[in-house]
Length: 413
Image (cartoon, rainbow, N blue to C red):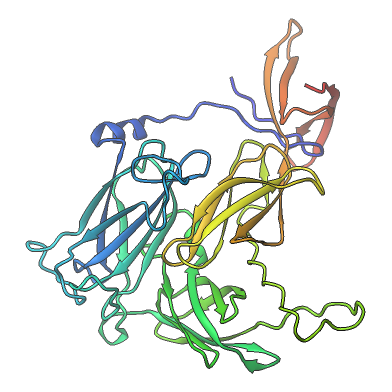
């Protein structure tokens, strides 16, 4: 018998139990566990010419190559770990004749892979990205093994021919004046939700020296995170940008530096300006329960090495815990599972970003055992990570309230 008990004031309870896995086992029997399969087509139902890029991660959140080798000097990963081309001889217009084209794909997943990140680029027969009819699609952090084929759809870009895509257009400014830009990327925030949408959109846009930028062919009715890079390497992020059907969203990003307090005479005009630190990673889950994993992601120049540094003590030393390489679109991500609250930051080149705090709450596992006295239970358990304190046991009432039943000291172990 499994009891679910929540300790409401001191620490939450982690419910331990058995999960039925018959459907997963059946899927693994139906196809090899190391083979990820899927479908690919346009939202108009046509077969498409596309490049699929795969980034694999192991249980420690580290990037691995297609053979399972952890990214390191011995196993460098400057781009995608695996690449699959689907219908490479088709034109960018695609075809509905499936007798000469395919809507399926497969790729071996490396040993030890527990999740995968996928980007899909529409291409033409010259192996170049071509959005003449279709836009980009993606999937973030797909758990492995995946049960059944993974569907990927590329959005039709022509609003006069069944397409619904929109765009983001804007200007980067300093002091309300346009400032030169060199890069812009937009990713859908829904990418971190369960896979329920037929298309999750993203795209690399065009950034100009006159300060303007545009990201075309984005899937509508989704919220996007917009990352714009100025000519000096400064990155600004804007979250929650909404894209509407066959419409243009306009926005402005200010690159003005924060005002520093006066600290003596100004520096000599000949002094070289300090390098701009990289932007901090975005922490998707700022609070986790011990034993769970959290994901951080961010933007860097494509192919740039990115190190993740961690410190578990306030003001303590940082150490490198993960290393990865920004994808061809400039995206990078890390998965971490610290036992206690941890400060995290990234290092790009020789520059460190500001830190972000990942908070970790204790998890309590409890096992009830009946005593000789009728209707009496005795509970024993552990707190993870190990720490002393006081544990309080509450009864949840039917009206939503609670009543304290007992309290007990927790040993240091």
